[in-house]
Image (cartoon, rainbow, N blue to C red; front, side, top):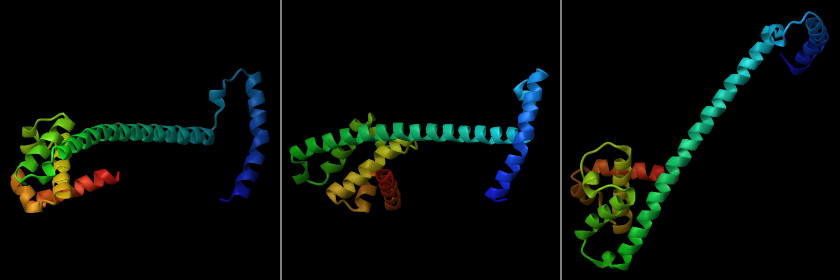
Length: 171
């Protein structure tokens, strides 16, 4: 149905609708009793769209809250890494660097180093562990096997953690 046909139909129906409304006022019929099925359908569609919009707004709000949480943790981590850099850790032996990274990330996320090191599938711990992988890989140029050995995991797990972190950083 094109726009001209719709306009023609509405213009034909409009006088009859006006007449119905005038008659209804005289007969003391409420407006809700007069709503025809077409109008009810339009109202239902609008209500559905409002519900969809409310869901979208709620989802966007939760994404914003999650972003703010990660932003706060990453800012703390940046401060910790800055402090680590001032101590000259980047010039020290490699064995101590992973421990210091785990400590800094744990502190930033409000976790303990033991929580990050153990096998745990809580989202916050997974994210913190992925941050550790990313810092060790990007800042210390550690290879995947060395990172995996430190955490007691396979290098494939480290690859997945790095992919997870890259996805988080992109969003």
